[in-house]
Structures are given as structure tokens and as C-alpha cells.
Image 1 (cartoon, rainbow, N blue to C red):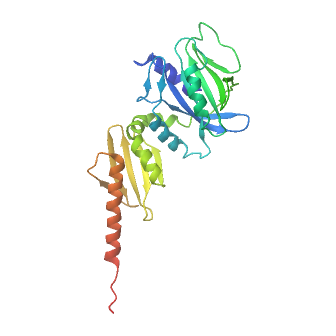
Image 2 (image 1 turned 180 degrees about the vertical axis):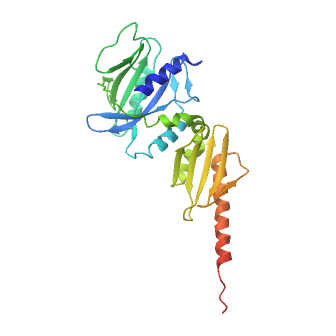
Length: 270
């Protein structure tokens, strides 16, 4: 909740403050409740205006992979977005899109919230509403086949937004999301780590023991290293597309490993 209020307020002060803004929620689901534990932002590459928003889905998919390293039980549980004026409930357009989307969720039901910044003019009340200063979020549930949203009682509890550390590397996530998502679908052993100065570290385990390929990624840069356990070797793949660069490096490392095996083999005379 703190993330939603803080980022909504920051968004309103930004040059794009007249646009809608939003978040995807990750959390834990049980029969009678949902616990939201992470909020993934719509991203700077979102398509948005005063009456619509389309999230940067590639970046959110990558961010979800990174957050779920901490807890594989986490899943998408819902979506939050804002409305201009005082429309505190989902629009007809929201309903048509959400009704199709919830059918793909585990359990066939989703959590939704609409944010507005008019609470000072019309003080909200109700167990399904959270408010701070002039901002409020009104919470709803929608299941596949429902004819309308249901107000959803909400409670706040002390906790940490598991996606908050990703804000410092969000530019790198958006820049490299498409390539990294492709790699994640094809390479099993990939780990992500948020480092200082807006750097996202990607580690890809190699076949040789205690060896890995390291990618250090920022918004406008990608650096590659071969971690040999006791030695870190910088690599220049001479390729600007990240996923192709990784495959070229892996191919060259495989050649080196094969050559090393051939050199260490001993011919036995007949």
C-alpha cells in the first residue's frame, strides 16, 4: 500500500502526471483471502493517456521472475490502476478486459483497485477503501463469469514490498527485458541480483563446476564476464543484441572446453 501511495503521488508530480498509472500485484492466494506482497510498476515504456494504460508486459514478466526467486509460491493476483477525476470503480472497458484476463489466473479470480486523487473533496468510506491525504484506492474482486465487480474488504499490515529493490534497476530491466525473457525460457539456471549504481547482475551456470557467465547490465550498457571460480575474465562478444551475445559466448566456451578435453586425452598405441 505504501508503494502505491508513494508512487502515485510521485507520478502526479511528473511530466506525465495527467496520464493513468498502474501496477501488477504479486502475492499469495488462499480460499478466502489474497496477500499482496509485491507491486510491479507499469514502467516508463508504458502506453498511457488520460483514459487508458497498457503496461510494459515484458518488463513486468522479467521482474516477476526476479521476485519469484525469493518465493516460488508468488503469483499474479491482480492489477491496480488510476482514474482521473472521481471515477472510483472500474470502467466498462476495464470490465471487458478484466473479465477475460481473470479466466487465465489461478483460481479464476482477480483483485483490482482503482486509484483517484479526489478524497479531500469527497471523503471516502468503506471497508474496501484505503486513503491517504487526497488519494484513495478502492478495492474490488472479479471472477470469471461474474456480471460485475464485488467490493473487496482490505486491510493493511506491516511488511516489505518484495519488488521495491527492483526500482533501482528498472531502467535496465526495461532495456533488456525482451532478450532476458527469451534466455530464461531456454536456459534453466539463471539467477538475478540487484547491485549498486543501477546494475542488474545475471548469472548463468556453466557445465564446468564452479563456473558461470556473468552479465552486468545497466540501461545503456551490457558487460560480460567468465567467472572461472578464482578468475574473472572480461569477454567482448562483438554483438549488440544481448541474447545473441550470450549464445555466441556459450558457443565459444563450449569450444574451449572441448579443446581442453582433446589436449588432455592420451593416445594408446595399438
